[in-house]
Image 1 (spheres, rainbow, N blue to C red):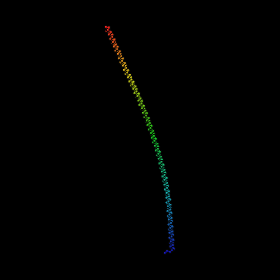
Image 2 (tube, rainbow, N blue to C red):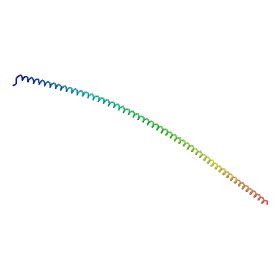
Image 3 (cartoon, rainbow, N blue to C red):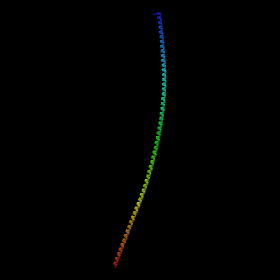
Image 4 (cartoon, rainbow, N blue to C red):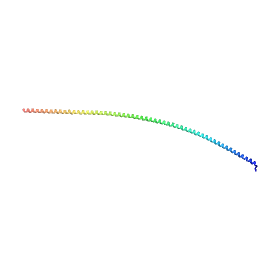
Amino acid sequence: MRPPSLQKDQREQRDQREQRDQSKQREQRDQSEQREQRDQREQREQRDRRDQREQMDQREQREQREQREQREQREQREQREQREQREQREQREQREQREQMEQREQMEQREQREQSDQREQREQREQSDQREQREQREQMEQREQREQREQSDQREQREQREQSDQREQREQREQMEQREQREQREQRGVRRSHYDVAL
């Protein structure tokens, strides 16, 4: 059996050891908590920095994307405007060319029509002149033929009249001659009868 003083000492020692152990454990726990807090703070700070960096990166990316989109939109707008201007210019040039071609065609058609009209008028005039000349020639020929016919008729009539007159004159002369001969014959007969009577 241990003496009471020893037991007391042992108990005190044990208590001190326990207190020391508890103190050490508490220190270790405090240290551990501090370390955890520090770790957590560092992690939080790292996370915050990472978040900030990510935000910055995202902002930069967004800005770059926006700038790129704006640039692309501007380029597309410029290209569209240039294309529209080119198309408008081409359309205007095509319209002008078409109008010029139409005007030239109209002018050519008008010239052809005028030439055709002039040709037709000339042909009609020539035909009319030819017809007039032909009609005049025919009229002249008809008049000449009529005159010739009239002259022929007149000559025939004159010849017939002359022949008739000649025949009448011949008949009259013959009748006169016959009458004279008859009268002479009758006178000779009267003289002979007178002579016979006288004999």
